[in-house]
Amino acid sequence: MPFPDISPFVGGWTVTLPIVGEFGIRWYALAYVAGILLGWRYALGLARNLVIRGGQPSPVSAPQIDDLILWVTLGVILGGRLGYVAFYQPHMIWEAPGQILQIWQGGMSFHGGLIGVIVAMALFARSNGIDLLKLADTVAPAVPFGLLFGRIANFINGELWGRETSLPWGFVFPGAGGAPRHPSQLYEAALEGLVLFLLLRFATHQLLWLQRRGVVAGIFLAGYGLFRLSLENVREPDNFLSGLVEATGGLTMGMLLSVPMMLAGAWLVWRGLREPVDIVRQAPATDAPKPGTQS
Image (tube, rainbow, N blue to C red; front, side):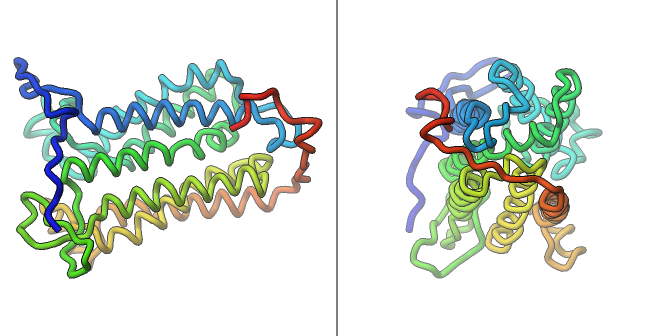
């Protein structure tokens, strides 16, 4: 089926500015804003929900989460851009260093953004005397919001398309050679966004694993790594990394970066489940927080 004619700019409205060039409100930018704002509100709900924590106070307060959102935003943007340059376009460092911070030209890496967020959380946790793993357990369940909207924005932009397919839902993306291709962006939105969110929701609200240090963060790392690793098989590798794919026998950069995530996440889950913790289940009728405070 033909790719829908959707402008990457909201309403198709743009202006031309010096240095920046074509400028307008991009769907991709709105995806970042929506993901961060919804993730922030969801993390607040998790921090205030005493029921899923067995009546114990959250390791991070609501005002601290409000402060953390700025740190996380900077980590996502700086880490995502620097990660893209380091992992996918390292030649920019010596050939065009002035373009490294030109994020409006496109080019962000999830794995780089993840590293940026981890560094931001580590610095924030140290400066506020917060346990890093417990902080990560509160932040991780909120990340799928950004992944969901980000992948939908990738689809709207007609970028990061999949490999050729004969399936009836294949799309003919502009600039992709005219053959139907997997809408891998939508596959990723479904798995990395919706399914991963539901998996983490089950861990926090049914298994009550926020009471186990590092387990929820580990599920996020392992879950995303597994989903990304599997979907790389239907996602078209970047042309400029064809040498890497050939040298590694078919492995893409996304695969190589996702394997450490899976291993680190599996280790965190294994470690957290081994710790002797008595899961406390509170009765919602007597210990539930005030209306409007549950996630």
